[in-house]
Image (tube, rainbow, N blue to C red; front, side, top):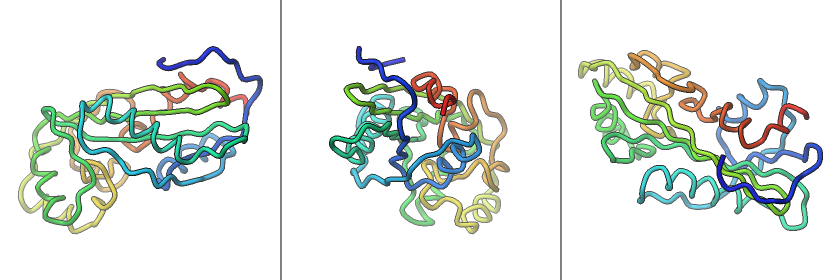
Length: 196
């Protein structure tokens, strides 16, 4: 656990998810957790050391969504895909999606998620890492997947919880991290979540 302050919070606070991601919402809903969605418009940084980048972006999102003088828990999250030190963000178009998936084909990449939880007088952060290995993909497989449109708004250009699962050979680590919200890491910095 990183970035814990000294001030303790008694009891659960209203939870705010600083994200538009339907995957993150679905994961929290599956837990039966009550929360408010307050999307953040904080621009995502694109360059820097990948692990620091993911945490910094999560902090930026959470801080932008926080309201002054509100006693609440604000959760920011940023997920990036990294292969050999190169960060693969959300493809801008089909050509970029195909190039991204082609680069990931037959290789093992990292999915890094930075988490930031803002509580009154305290910021908690965590980083989750999952290794994902793609099968060696044929050109027609790449074309077929790009045609699904699942690559839109997805770091690395794929959705593992949907047809993107067919691209994957192996996953090492928390698969929820690849979907968009690493539960083990979240509970590590916010054990109060399950007391809600």
